[in-house]
Image (cartoon, rainbow, N blue to C red; front, side, top):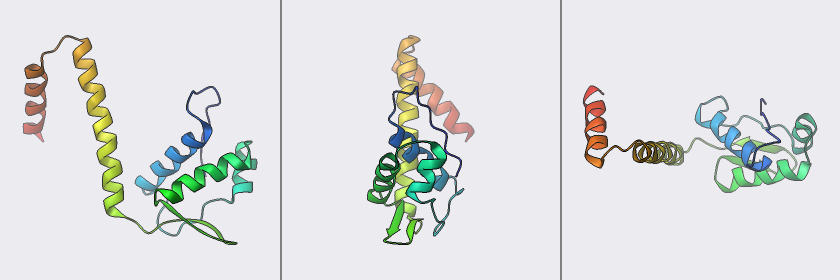
Amino acid sequence: MNIIINHSSMVPIYEQMTEQIKGMIKNRELVENDVLPSVRVLAKELKISALTVKKAYDILEEEGFTVTVHGKGSYVAKNNAEQLQEEYRKEIEQELEATVEKSKRYGLEKSELRDLFEMIMEEW
């Protein structure tokens, strides 16, 4: 599994892992029933604590992205289209919020931003 940890980031390692694994599931790089590496194997591979990997796996399971079978490991959960759709909405909402903030910094009026959005939507 290709997870990149940025040790100088302010984002905790377990969150970096969680987001990257969710991204792999959303992008269908990981699909239903794919086996995730064991906690120990991934910890060794990433040179981090097994507790950190366990925390990330627990969060993924809590959020419904994975299922853990005691003694067998963690698997990608059955594709929950509604959950994935909600994740996509959150991502788009964050990008829109960033765009609104940038528009404020650049001095655009609400009406100008709305006009730009409408123009883009017409092309869609």
